[in-house]
Image (cartoon, rainbow, N blue to C red; front, side, top):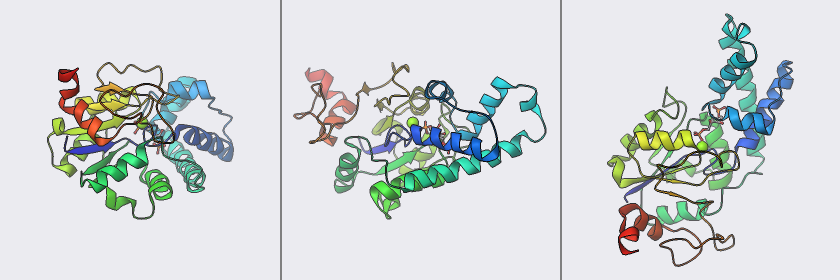
Length: 254
Ligand code: XBP
Ligand code: MG
């Protein structure tokens, strides 16, 4: 295991409630009588990317109107407002990273293990979250920050992961990806990258058969995992345990 690649939404932090709140606030701002409930939004998350999600929903409720000339413009406008709301919510500093993520990123940094980001979200969203959780210099922690500006085809297409691999310059099999969703897992697997999945509340029902491992979260000394962590001496996941899973020695010795 030579490098780590992190998805952002749902994986580094539970951001989807903030995304949903931002979408709903934007609908009010532009006078749309749309409201995305939690259960509706869970289904809409099958479509990666905010603009793509908006178009999908529009086509679902009013296919004729969604074919109109101004649809692209309207979606761009709603999405720009949604992005401003999201940035404001996240910049308020209320969102923490999921258990174990900060510890693992620091451990990898200390061990000089290269890291990259692979997300389908808008660049300012990544900046808002990582600036507030990792500090102003967060970019220096990552060899590559691959986001919606990098990949035209969003997950489950492998594009964003292929971009991360190009930035890291390691073969896919030498990397480990962290994901929370089926689309994300499919994208990482299509790029050939072994993947650890930590589902979020929104993605708990997804299919993760191709994952190297599925865990509720990575755990931390003050947020111990409830279950025994295979290959780890303690109830949280560290680089040593990750590399045992990655190179398969855990299963050989088990
Ligand atoms: C996350 C997403 C993102 C956000 C919305 O997918 O689908 O689109 O929900 O962000 P992943 P934007 O975690 O698989 O990268 O509105 O900025 O597109
Ligand atoms: Mg995700």
